[in-house]
Amino acid sequence: MLGFSTHILRTGDVLSVGVPANLFLFIIFLIPLPVWIGAYRMTKTRRGRRTGILLVLANILILGAIFSPARVTLDGKSGTAKITNVLFFIPRHHIVPLSSVQGAMIKTSDLTEALTLVLNDGHSIQLTPFTQISGTDVAVAAINDFLREHGASGQPY
Image 1 (spheres, rainbow, N blue to C red):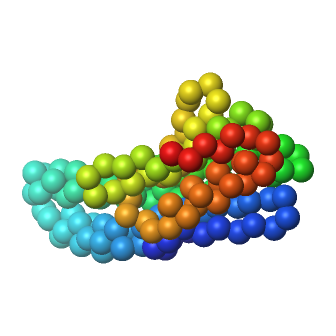
Image 2 (image 1 turned 120 degrees about the vertical axis):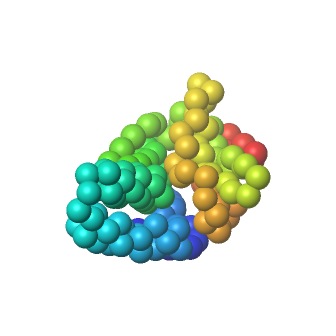
Image 3 (image 1 turned 135 degrees about the vertical axis):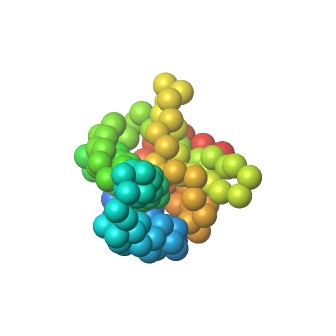
């Protein structure tokens, strides 16, 4: 999922929050990849080929870190929170009881922010890397409101 803003869908006792990978950054780092591959194929020297391989690998590594969409599904009927996020093209799935989720918060750095779920035991699950995706404040409010409706504290941060 690529995009610029967070998606929130509420149907009855189920809240689904989707955070896309940043489309702009993905395109910026995807465009040079064919150039690096072409430069590698055209280079005849060993040193030039080694540099080409390193550039391609670095670009793929950056793409893997940038392409990190996440989805949180809070289900009030079954009492579970399903968390799916992707990092370095590897999906990770977590299922935790809804009662163990304390709330959602936004971690901030200088220019970016990350959506995070806070558990009752003090641990937190960072759903997204630090990006400039819009709508994370609305997603945090929706998650905290949903948790309050279903008996959790849903503490605003």
